[in-house]
Amino acid sequence: MLVLATAVFLYYTIWTLLLPFVDDSHPVQVLFPPRVWAIRIPVILVLLGGAVVGSFLSVVMIRSNRKKAMKAKQAGKSK
Image (cartoon, rainbow, N blue to C red; front, side, top):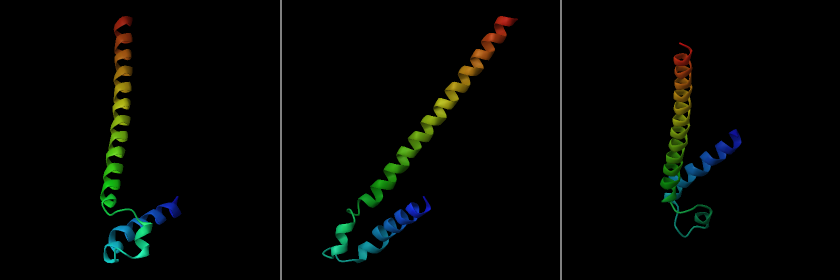
């Protein structure tokens, strides 16, 4: 995983920081997508990650409230 993360970091760094200084007709430009995706991809990943974390927290909170309600209901019946 460390090697993969390092490779992705290097690829993204070259794509965003070095490629703007390379001629558009240079053959290395073929190896990289258009620069607009250098912004879109991280934004999409952050939005998806936030949605996943928010959904997980919502599910945990809903289940926690259901357990508390069941305990309160059982405590009310036993009295």
